[in-house]
Length: 147
Image (cartoon, rainbow, N blue to C red; front, side, top):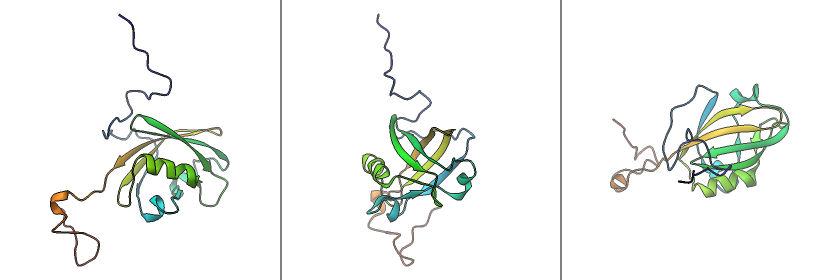
């Protein structure tokens, strides 16, 4: 019987697959609730200030590991607002069909002067179809109540 070796681009088994959510590892993380500016038309993502002291102040690649795939995105640490490249972030947004209201949890798995590695978990912000006619949650007059 032949052994089935995984290709080098495949992630270790500790990575979430097909929408699975894993517990945080204890490393630094930040959860973003995506807004319109994160997903369209600009598609920008500025990393929060709590990461600034641990991230390098240079331009280096950042690798996002998400749902068994990876995306390499330029990280601009030399800017006041440390950010990811907008074109490459847009590809991640489009590939994962992200939209306003979804959440992304970025967990910093590796940080060096040559690369950043984040495990990203996506939490969908969809309102269940059964509630669409009852509540929209788009205004203060149509809130969504969670019990």
